[in-house]
Length: 473
Image (tube, rainbow, N blue to C red; front, side):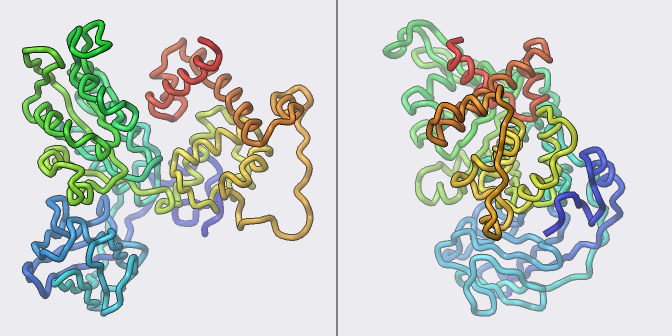
């Protein structure tokens, strides 16, 4: 694994600006290239080319979103993913019903060299052949809007992001929890012709099922128990701008036809109303789920999926873009007001962590370090596998941590509370001070405060509301 202070081709990078300038100076790259040919099965003769400049993994299966579509009834909707990994082609079985094998050996994930390997899925056989490497000038941007990332996995996404920002088509953003789906959607909005309009987020997991329809489409007074006044829905609130439907895979099946109609006809009817209201909204959807699997399970309508997935973008998890860990850590450190460079030993621990919580977990780790100093590592033991190389080697105990006598950490420790409660009190104090300080710095403008914090506006508002609630505000 690369050193914590080495990024982008082994060049030394001591600060964020140095890394970003190095990205702009990267020479053209020689990228591995492969051809995948269907040699047996209903789609014999089908061909797909894959190289390292592709914006996301190429999919093989029966779904319309697959780059190599197969009619084989024994093949799953999303059966197999293909992407270039170093000098090899990585094949990943996507939890298919009937499995995948290469040269007769079944696998979950495997690297092949392109020496004519035979890949069987269902009754179909694919042959993988290496082609002459292509000399490609990769995009040199180190960010898109407020999305930061200089790794090849992110840089090859940015041209697609530029095209999506210039378009008005519905879009599905896929990726694990914490990969930055909402921040990407907000950046696409801010870079689009709709930037002057509202950006509205609806989280399908945060609203009770019986209130979702009224929340999205609005309601008239008396439409249901508790509706004491008429209310505009989020489609109307977002008119002229963008509506992000977060975790759309969790949307109740009974409401999906109504969402489909709203998108197709650009009109909504509030509960209890007799009239339809025209809306001008670009709809984006984000999901951590494989929507093709949800369709197969009967939990998601295929017609809604086809309408939403006019365009699709897949955000890679942080473990697949390890070159961005140090870059993002420095970015968060600067945005959160860190004094001086990021400590080297802290960077080493960051780069040796697997980040199951992705970028959100990394952001919280940096925030915790700023709030607690060296104590952040001690408090994370048992909660996150954060230390490099696992348990401390040798029999020597870690050096004692002695905080200044007047700080919040010292006061909390004196209370003698359990570890989890002590951590909660310290982090609450940091969040309260940070939210207030960044709001003061931007004259109470929550949008600018969220941008300066390096987090999505909705997440900043949630922090603000949580701290206001705890202080009785």
